[in-house]
Length: 112
Length: 112
Image (cartoon, rainbow over all chains, first blue to last red):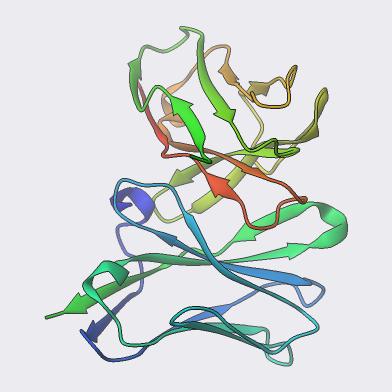
């Protein structure tokens, strides 16, 4: 929602184009990664996840790519729609710690 | 409908007046968590629970208490709220550790 951050990184994308949202994670031992979408006034919503033994996973209109070498995660949204406008968070989990650590988020703004 | 329900959605209170934010899930999930979301700081875990009567501290537990007497409920208790606890709070639940959390709609708390 709007309270996520006053100065979030913002990505502006033309409607119909593909969006790529990037995330650098912190712990090389993290073994599970998740992307969440948070629309204004709502709680975060699970989009897609990926385990560390994979480098790519596809969902409906979304693809997550994992590059463990540089600790980088990306979310690709195909044919971006107005309903995709939201803040997107990546999250990482270290299995044995039973915790999920959320990134700060990126705001996706859709241009008409 | 599978969901996590938080109440209240909005709350304004005064310093020192005990309050409880309720959280209930209807998915028979074992894992539940409380997060707070602040501008520039993202989502930070307050407490989590892996089952009935099993709770543990997250990253920012000071000033909060929780209980898990029943599987479906995970209330957040502020015994003596202070202004620095003004925030947006989210409850979340999951069936398998913290993978693929389902979040509630949030409780916006203001402590004056």
